[in-house]
Image (cartoon, rainbow, N blue to C red; front, side, top):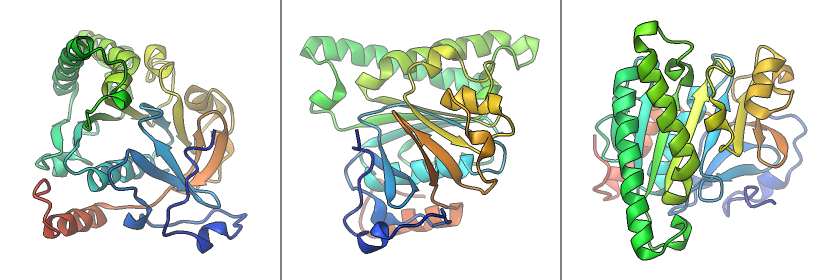
Length: 288
């Protein structure tokens, strides 16, 4: 299956040049497919894409400063730029809101939760939306969102899932973490067919930080450099991430097969520029 290995129209000759050594590259809007849910995740010899309508959920792990949050921002920017009027994003920024709080006023962003309690409320909201969608699908005899006229998608981005682990939080917050895990498991289990996409990231990949109920429903995996084989096995179910070259953005992308890639680099200034350009081009669904 090579549906995720799609060369963009505007990248032809360069993409065909063999490149045995992966190198850094900057995020480019020309690599987007407007109106689709296909997102560039990295380069090998060509740009490699992930299709969120084919594989709705994604598990991401890696040591600190290896590129995990930058990769999340690549997905975040791609979704908004490709579908500014059709994407809804809920972010659990459990690093105190330091990475995504600045984007809370974007119309595509429904919520940026910055702690466990806020995250539980946001996940409860998503769960209730899923139940409403289930009812609508039953009334219309729908099975999967890709077979319906519905164009909108809801993405739940979790940056640091360890903060939602019942075994890793203080005792007084354990009940909230347990509830969060129930919600995450339900989103991963039944949300995909209803248009809900879960993107879960952690820099502490362990059985405690990545629930098996969630993981078993996430076919797509991205592993950045890990400190040991244990972390690699938690994310990929195999070794390999622990021997990646310690270069930010270097990762293994796994679906049926594993591929070593270099993820695109993007920063907040670039994202701001892209959003400003989108607004200047007359898209009223983007404002600051």
